[in-house]
Length: 533
Image (cartoon, rainbow, N blue to C red; front, side):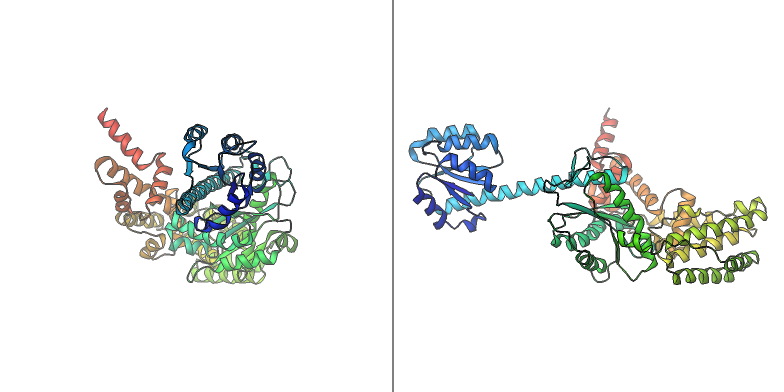
């Protein structure tokens, strides 16, 4: 706050005798005329001006008019006497809303200033939230769609290749993160992508990085991958060990929480480099599987070390042993040989991406064996192609081993008569169970346990046969039921959300809008208007 009065003793008295700290404001300066006040407001970033009306050169009204013209965000409180009501009316026309009658009561003055200070803080918080959402939307569009930001300024970056800071000292990094055991986590927590689940994940990251002054902005990039954009604002780069220490704290999280793995991208200064750096950080998450004991990686270090990037070739003996076991239809031996092979790869610090590349080669040979058994045998191999595996979900050797062994077991069964409808029967049983229990907090792991198969294998079979994931199927089923309730009952929307299986009302609304294009309330209104018409 700036105090303005042509009598220094009054300024001093107001500054020193009024308990401004109770109002939540700091008096940063005093001015003795309007011209001086204008200079101080601009120089000191003043939010609130307390000014007398009668002053030489530029009076309080002229000062108010000048402030409103050039700095409309600055609030003004005018001190006015009994004989100055005409001045007060002029001030109202200028947009001044706050007046104190001299001699002002101290408690009244503190109360008014406290109210104004609260309004300023609330307005600033709204602006910050709006700015944050604008930036977050730009970052999402940049990373998910490759769309250039609508404005040149993105989080202090420039799209024209120039530095985002006038001083040239600002730069950004992406932090890519995923849960260490993606398949297990997703199997246990199908609603992990609800607003509540994602907020917990974001909070862990942002609360760890904010104390370092990094201004983190996080968003879900894909299932089991979060991207966080961070800006270093000081002239000195934050040392990597400080980044690592903060992220290690976030990696472990609360007791019983999912452990996270992080990759920190290289630094960049312009938006044209942002997408490349972000994608490289996401891709580098695969390298983390080469050493699961480590929770924080740096993309530049990974690139320099080549960790987990070694291209590994098949051992002829290993490949031959697996194929021979497959030819003998020996499920136990196939599983044992595959586990031995995967254990060998782990010992060589191979990563999961390289493991699946090798498995794709093995699968080609296995499918040749199936085709040699006739077209019907090949048709019975109703399992997804290896390219459909999401390596950000199946991101550990344990999960990869489970899905590879189970897929090979299914392929082995396909080579034998009498198994053509087995997988379809499993999926139909699952759908029946889902239909009966979708109103509850249903998880893929629960359905898999009921079927007596692993969650990973259940997810693979379900997506192959239904063309959509378990979560997508359940959401579509629930939303169809919600549409019926909205059309046919007078139940309130939050009651309908609970009836169809959503405990988080906001999450229900977001899913409903994503699938129908409208909110539940708009859908109900549209249906009622249609019937009335």
